Amino acid sequence: MTERHIIFVPGKNPKPPPEAHRRALWRTLVEGVRRAEPAVVESLADAHEQFHLAAWNYLFYRTYKDINRDLPWIDALIHQHGPTPQDIREARSWQYRLAWLMFQIADHLPFLIPLMPAHIRNMAAETRRYFVNQYDIACEVREVLKVQLRPRLKNGDDILLIAHSLGTVIAWDSLWELSREEHWPGRVHTFLTLGSPLGMHYVRRRLRGADRTGAERYPANIRHWVNVAAEGDLVALVRCFARDFAEMRRLGLVESITDHCHGIYNYFRNEHGLNVHRSYGYLVNPAVGKVIADWWRHDDAGDDER
Image 1: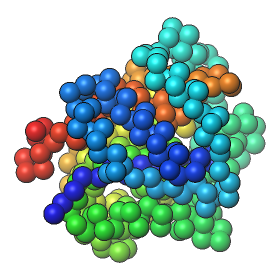
Image 2 (image 1 turned 30 degrees about the vertical axis):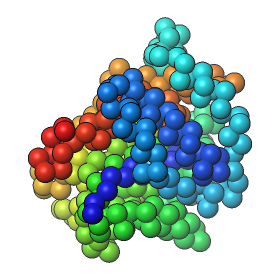
Image 3 (image 1 turned 90 degrees about the horizontal axis):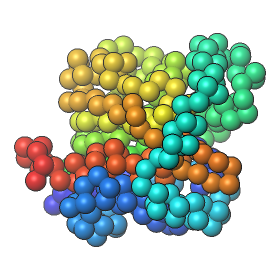
Image 4 (image 1 turned 135 degrees about the horizontal axis):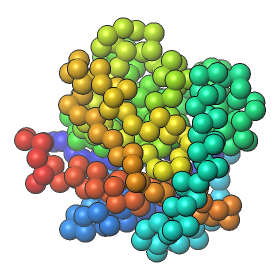
């Protein structure tokens, strides 16, 4: 008997212990669905055991983050029902536009990265570490996700795979290996990417399959791909994917690629100020909630909402 499952792949940086992190993510995910489709919340909220976390971060960083540092800010996020004028101004500021331009240049000329702001240097260093794969760390990280995907794909389960930040790269590479190297059966119904660097020149040249041609360049186990990028999110340097990955549609590898890359605001704040990249801020956004609600309601037979 097939089941429905949501699998979440976190982004970079140390995370809280898995169960505490899973609860916080689930709380914000349900709130996002509530804002988008209130009628769906009751049935979804009862499905918390079908929400799974591919907790790869401890393998990569060898440390946990204290969840208590985030809880007050998550509470504030949930009680704020939209971006403030200040949030919008900061996300669209000239400082962001300048940083975006600098990062665009560095994406094609990586030797300039040491001249970038600290948060860009940090992101670049962690991405490079993943691709270098020293001591097989990237292989170990991908296996964390693949052990969750294999039985559910084989069973024909209805899977919503949500990935954030560097987690979208891990998810892409894992899906590619499952379909192209392991020839594993089944497909993910919806691949939802949040704040993803998959469109970056540096990243695309290093993805699994990048050295192949034609259909072999891409995973063959995604039905629908939805990408969401918030205003001001520098990690999502290339914000829209439908054009850059159009060959996947032309080759019949995906049924749809949909972008939500304009007018999306991530207004998570903590003691350091606005952070337009945090996963909690993406999950409470009604644009993300609508994608999740639509997946939850769809009918596999006709792929229509129930």
